[in-house]
Image (cartoon, rainbow, N blue to C red; front, side, top):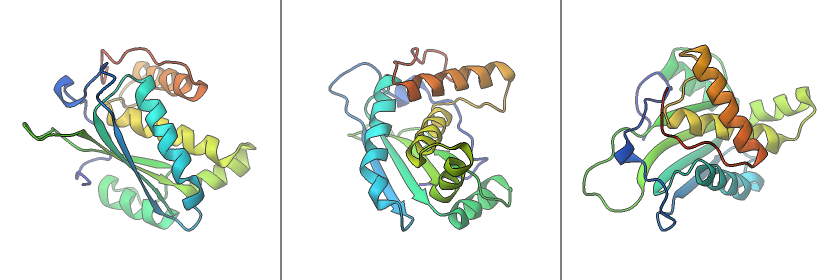
Length: 178
């Protein structure tokens, strides 16, 4: 389901993301493509659901993959023309199909577990803290935020990431991509 592009999210239209209804459950699929990732699968799934709830995003399907550096480097080279490993890549699903029942595809977040482990050692933090940061960052990209567009958007994205990581509710997403 990867969408060829820059790896950066385009803002979603409001009809593609449901907000507010408690009955609109989101689905989070976690794929493990790293030998040390299985132990983190349930936690990543729980955190992704919690982040979506805090952002008041409901009724979507999110795919998260934990991969090795070699895999994320290949994706980064293919989709962003950057021949290096990176921490996280986001691939928006695009416009939802009209009339298709079930959750609306939000997109894919691909996280390098190797990079998270290295960053945790360098920062003196736990691996799951790095994964949480990458996951929050990736989800915000899927929702249209892009820290490379402007200093204002970078500040907004950092603030939203911090709110997610601290467990507080994020401000409503009324101005996606701004």
